[in-house]
Image (tube, rainbow, N blue to C red; front, top):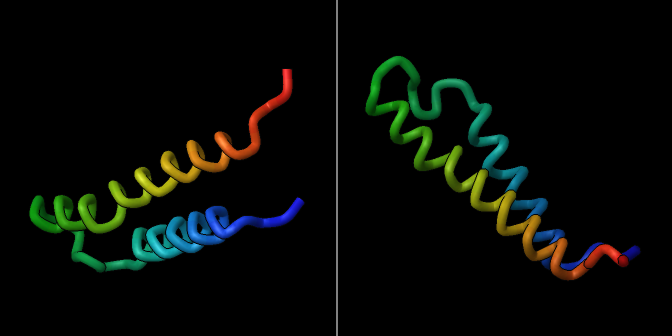
Length: 65
């Protein structure tokens, strides 16, 4: 099975946001502002990338009945 362009972009985006999510202190934890910035910069884009990527890939590779 070949890896398509969509899958490569999906993998790169998920890896990027996963790395950003796990960097310590970016943004600094410990206050509400840091939590909101962290969620907007890493958590929400990570979820969006995963679900949109899953939708696009599963639409391409449909399960047979």
